Length: 184
Image (tube, rainbow, N blue to C red; front, side):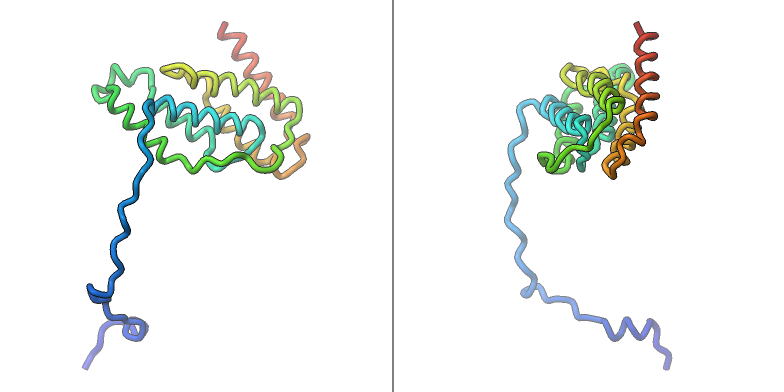
């Protein structure tokens, strides 16, 4: 007589619970009402979280990831290319992104100590990435990959020795300042 399966399967096998022993389904959870202006609420929350990053606080909701989501909702060519980009779809997208944000927490502890060049870089990025969130549609093309680079540097600074990052921050400030000069 041949047996199939492993010995461990036979030893750890359990009988299925009977219906009468299953716990009752949890009561329906009441969700908070949707905001009157989901997109405005979402953009304000993204701006608040990005401001925390530029102040030197690393949080669970990285600014760059949220800016990418905002850019996908308000892509400049979206209206022309996609017939689904009507206001109800965008409103639904804002509601989804707002609901997906990790719970908001006020920063605890002291912010990372940014040197003068890193502080200047943070302020330049704040103007390029947070300022436009106050207008519809937000014009975030100038935000770019600089934000991801800043968050990476800030992550390193949180471990200490902020002075080690000053040359990189100075290079980034010079690069952004040159880009601003050529845009005018």
